[in-house]
Image 1 (cartoon, rainbow, N blue to C red):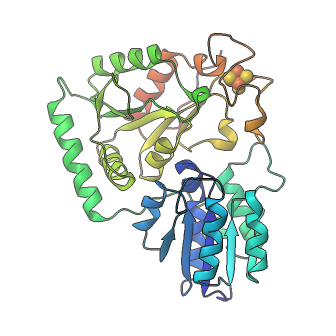
Image 2: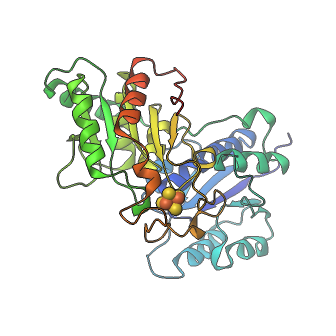
Length: 343
Ligand code: SF4
């Protein structure tokens, strides 16, 4: 592949940590195939923390404020600061694709075109960039990986060491519960989390948590920035531990930091949004799920499920026994491809 680009700008202003993590293989692929290029990323905080420590990224820019129009203004500023030869964006609102096209750069502005319902979002990005001649076939199977400084790994080891040593009757690898979710419709019921934590603790697993719950069902990991969390997760993974949680940024971060994950998928389709560990799908036959248009689902914004007035039926469908068995199987043999029992 000819190395034609000296300045590459990647724009991901979709807003979620998970959105940026799904794009990491594309960022790393572009850096690999254009090794002399200066690659900049324009994204939101706190995801920006992850790419600031990434040696593949020369500069990270973020919007200056949270008011309407901040993202468009940030694109204008990025283009004025340095004109890119190549611009790639996941973001299509506020005329951002036209701004990039007007810069005269070669642009890839539609990474969401004709998405198949069963193709993972990140794999779709790679396939489209390969079709544009910007990546090679070898890039198509890349998975998200966060690149961590040694200091974040060392700090994570220290944190996890202390928490595991303090756990009573710790005879099995640690398990991290990611209980929160940005969208209410993705939350697993609180009672299910507590039951899972009790069963895991009884089986000898130190139970740790991520999130801001007032009364968490396990011992919280010390708070910090995203590289700190990734360092802690990497330490959990090194001990054969597992991270379990819904379709959220921290669970994607855990997989990208090397942990085995158990994903609890309800309103989103695990075939398209799966994290790549053991992804469990609640109520797979729900007729309201729209894998390629999740924001148009009747349950999406207000967590009102047409099938159950008390809460998302798909999340409730993921039983505590099923999830406990999946987590236990993953901790016993992290590379095992565990099968969901039939029926
Ligand atoms: S309609 Fe209900 S069961 Fe279906 S995806 Fe939405 S929350 Fe889940």
